[in-house]
Amino acid sequence: MDLVNNLVDEQTGKTKNVGRKASITKEELIQAALNLIGPEKSIASLSLREVAREAGIAPNSFYRHFKDIDELAIELITQAATALRSIIRQARLEASKQKSIIRTSVEIFIRQLDADEGYLSLLLREGYTGSANFKAAVDQQLHYFQQELQEDLIRLEHIHGTALYRPDIVAQAITRLVFNMGAHVIHRSHEERMQMAEETMIMIRMIIQGARGMSPEHTI
Image (cartoon, one colour):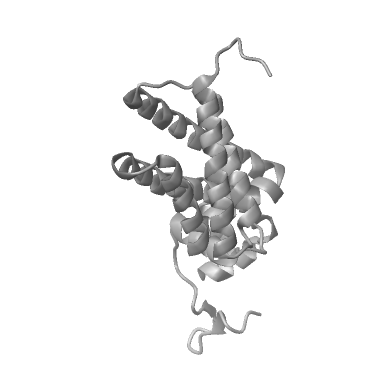
């Protein structure tokens, strides 16, 4: 018997739960899972009972919101990416008035790693080491990042009177480059992260400058 959560009522003789919530929201369950994972712990290693214990509910209450731990994990990946996209989108809008969207986007990316709030490290880890389902969920979210970046690139090129050859591929290359950089620096110091970030920004500028000068006839 669970001596912490299950006690016997002296008057009725029935077992009662102590310290467990009568109900819980989907968001609270997601936060409980996020609390449990870290740089060394993948979503795949979580158990339903572990998440339920962290959330302060009976295991059966879990099924009111998710059919299994994988469904919770994919929802967590989706919410993590949505939160990160919102942060980067706002940063790019501000950057368009003040400084380079490249520098601002990469700096925000590094800042999120430094903050260690779990969202970015979750995407990076599951995108490279997660299960096939988790990798597919991360790939879908990366596609959304690419679409938003593509729209921004087209808009800014139009403002500057320039154009990119295949902006869709340019956005894909930049997105994958930045996330690959993040995966390599996730366990490194802030100084090492910033050094690699500076190198990444140079690579991004090379991609953009090259795309501005390319045409379908160009070959290497």
